Image (tube, rainbow, N blue to C red):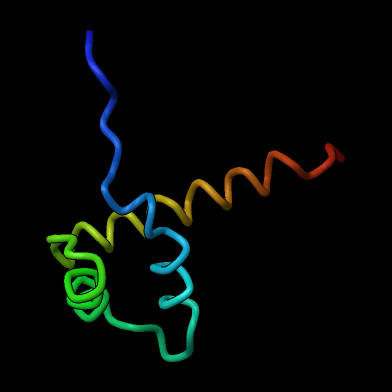
Length: 71
């Protein structure tokens, strides 16, 4: 399959998104979408941010498990 693999437009804003979700109570995905539009002119839907965060969280957990020494 030739061509460039899919890359999310949210990657440059990953740190900002995750920090907003870490606060207690976490900022709603809809509010994060509004904030990205206001600050960075990134048109994105709430569901896309939700999927992005869940996927990145899963990747981080997997990386942490792989770094653990075997028993």
